[in-house]
Image (cartoon, rainbow, N blue to C red; front, side, top):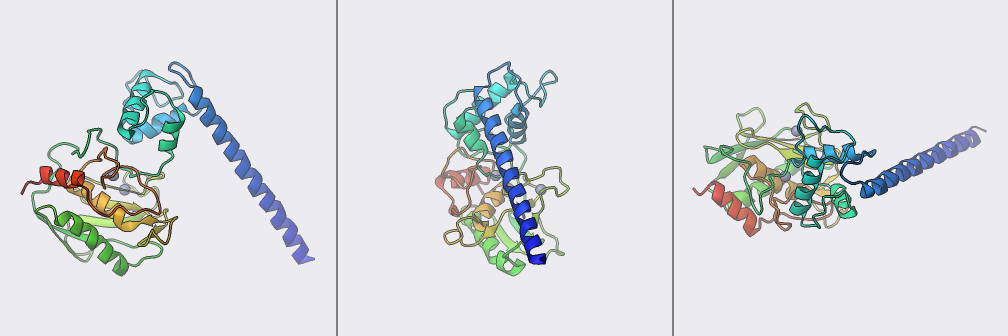
Length: 280
Ligand SMILES: [Zn+2]
Ligand SMILES: [Zn+2]
């Protein structure tokens, strides 16, 4: 009897769950389709989400007249154009399917600087010292601080090989410039991750924050649904040294990234960037 009841209960919950999913899915699809029709001057449900996304990543700059509401305004059109240009997709100034697709692609949480190729956020975001100490604050599911340590060391080595820097790991209670850790979505710095993999602060802040809600791996070739720690580390360490995003898709400093891939080696664009920032 108890078994039958629990089976029934489970069945009910399962059905409820499936219904919930299909409801959520259809609402999402509907609003996306609507947004593709949206033109300047229109007010449409969901436009505020697009504005919020573009503001978070440094594209939407609203004045007092325009806000993060559902109106398709001038600043939104120009933000969409800049975003599309950065991505190398058709510059339509509309919320078209390519644009929506791009917005659904996981990425780094640091806003884009909008300069072609390698770029810097602006002076004086540079380290004076060439000897930086880094430290691991905590670990994440699937890792220990001991297994993370050689991965981060490799990531630092990528930059050390092409710059005047030397990096060394220290214990967390020893004075260090770079502090690396894994955090929940809201973690007290005013920059919740959302779907971002990670973010890092420019010099001389030194904080590198990974999103603990992603599944992390050291072997993305085998674990296709997980995110390669080392690839993201090389990218975020680039920010911690003062580099902004590159518009070159192949570059480590490109903002977008997907689970299951590896991008651990610096490209010429990345190397030119760090060399221009730190010639010696
Ligand atoms: Zn980034
Ligand atoms: Zn953070």
